Image (cartoon, rainbow, N blue to C red):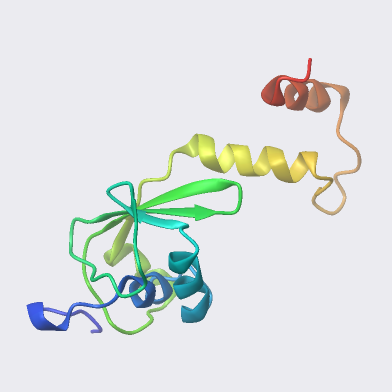
Amino acid sequence: MASIKEKDDTPRIDKWLWAVRVFKTRSQASQACRSGRVKVDDQVVKPSREVQPGMVIHVKWGPIERIFKVTDLLKNRVGAKLVAQYMEDLTPEEEYKKLEIIKQRDGFRPHGRGRPTKKERRELDEWFGWE
């Protein structure tokens, strides 16, 4: 489909991150690279860095760090159902749990959940070390 098989036509990292839906727009992906939020091998990369299969990409995304492994190359944006063919999400579950706890702590609660219970407040205090 949109897969790239020729070695000469490898995509830029900003375009690849946009194509696999890590960022909503390509300009957001480019800005993340320029601001140092995208790393490969613990080195900050420029938006023009070429992507290779097997490459592990670290993206600082809000309060968490997401980790992706490139499984295949592509040059055009694909549907959400096809993203799994091109990348593998290696982000630890603890990062996603941390995001949920931060959302709760910052006052974000899903509609209808009300205030945190005493148990939830204790868990949050323990997580942040505020005992």
